[in-house]
Length: 355
Image (tube, rainbow, N blue to C red; front, side):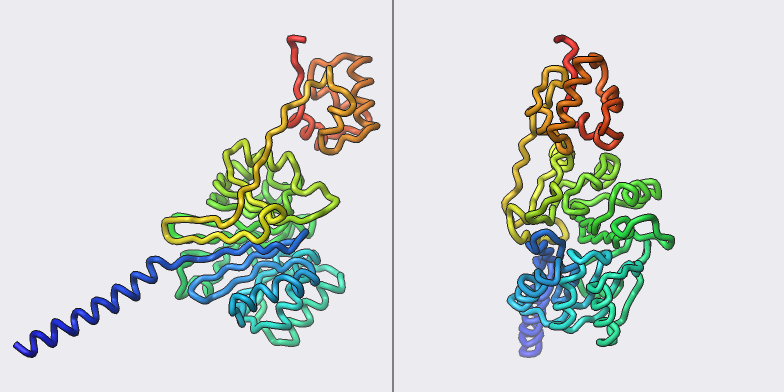
C-alpha cells in the first residue's frame, strides 16, 4: 500500500511537471519586432531565446536604436544575422550590432557593391571569423528551426543568377509558424516580384513586410494577389521619396489588408502562436481618395496625383481642351507621361462619359 501511494505521488509530480513544461510551450509565442529605425529597415525575431536580426537601418539607427533595443531585451547574442542587400539603410546598423553582440552566423545576398559601409560590414565579419552563408532560393536556415516554435525558415530569393539591380536581389525570407506565415521582402521591386510569381514560389503569407518602404516600384498587383496578406507592415520614416506611395496603400486597402507603419506606430511587435496572431500597434488608417474626373479637373486636382506637378497638370488640361479625351490611355501622347505614370493616373482618375 505504501508503494502504491508513493507511486501515485510520483505520478502526480510527473503529471504536474509535464503539464507545466508542455503547457508553457503551448502558450509560448514567437515575437517579431519591426523596429522603428526611421527611413530604414530592421526586424528582430525571437523564439525560445533564439534570435534572428534582419537588417538594422543606417549606422546611426544601429547605434541609437537597434543596439539599445536589443540590450534592453536582455539579448547578448544574435543567432542568425541577415543582410538583405548592401544599401546603407539596411546594413549600416549591422556594423554596431556586429561590434556589440556575439553572432552565430551571417546570411547575405553576396552582391558586389563598393560603398565604404558595405566594405566595413564585410571586413568586420572576417575579423570576427563569423560563419558566412550566401543566401539562395530554396535554402532553409536549419539552425533557427531547431528547438524553436518556428516550423520553417526558408530563403525564396535571390536566385542563383542575379537579375538587374541591388534591390531586386534582396534576400527574401518566408517564416512559417503553425497556421501563420511571414514574408520578409527586403527592397525587391517589380522585376523580382514578377520572377517569384512566374516561378510559382509559395508566396502566401499572413503578414507581409512591404518591400522598399512602400515604394510604388514594388508591391505590384500580381505580387499582392499571390501573397494574399491579411496584415502589412511598412518600415518607413521621414523621407523625400514619397514613401509609402499612395498607390501601394490603396492597393493594400482595396484587398482588405490591415496596414501598420513604423512612421505612425513606432516599433511594431507581433506575437504569434501555432494558431493565433496579435499585433501590438495602432493600425494605419488609409483614407481612399475619391478619383478625379479628368475632363473637368482643375490644375490643383491633377497635382494631387503622385508624380504630376504644375507643368504636367497644365499639359493635361491643354491636351483635353485641344483633342478631347475618350480614353485615359490617350494621355500617353502628353509630353512627360510614360507608361508607369499612365498606370498611376489610372489609379487616381476616371472619365465620366455622362458629362
